[in-house]
Length: 412
Image (cartoon, rainbow, N blue to C red):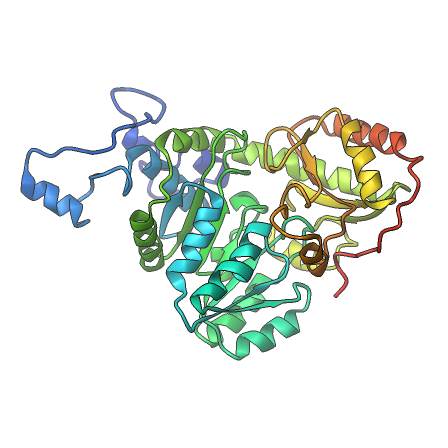
């Protein structure tokens, strides 16, 4: 990708070629998996220059690795960032970034609808280090702006949210954050770099659970953070010392998956929209949450800041948790598992997936009903997935309506 410097390849080409050419050795067409823990130097002065970061090279696997570096470079190119660094998991990337940026006495503002693990960092861990945490109603941009205006060190956003697919106006909230000098971090996992680039909307850092859509095959854990060279260097330093290093074999698997990212996301975007439209009309479904639907409360915002609406949707069955228990085992083309973004469709309720760490009361406070199902669309034929959903809904249509309080994810 460096031969024609006057042309900027499109996202699909970057996903295939980005960052790889420098590391293709002895005529190989694929990046090698370098398992070496350490890297030797005959010249001690050259070794010292590499160790200080003045020359390119690798010293020790906890710090950097050739295979891992290619993965970081590919994501950097896709997000249009100055730099990128990786982590062993998505949650390591999230927690590592927050602990890099925040110190005792600082304040972080976020939304109530963050991923369950992130929510635990806000509610359980950061307060132990005397970091003030303020979680605002995800849909109330005015309340968010008022809180930001009071001052904060970090504004942490997630859009679309997991699992209720809420959307926040990134440009609007970035403007508010910049007025008080806050650093804006955006979790872009559900959107992917194919559908949304938060850095282009003014964010300072963007992160991904690479385990999900980036890898796409549910066979490798990983996380990645992109942004300015200055900020990423700070995050990298925290990670190299604390040790949540991405394994080179996992980096290779993520790289292999990313070559088809744009094709997978294209299919998942199309299928998810068709499925959301189908579910919205089905009498057994109370509500459907997908940014691509005109009925979505922030459809216009999603249309403005996203190129596609993603491969994840959620819906509430009539009959609550009892209906969920009956419905899910009827699916033939979906893994009932705690994952998303895979080539195979994956389905499950937040109580066992995105928010398993949270109590039912905590989920209720976030507007997550127990009858909600998160449905991560795979690359199967759309018609087959709709047929599968139809037969599963038909099979549980006789379920007596459970006596559960109705919670609407978009109610304040």
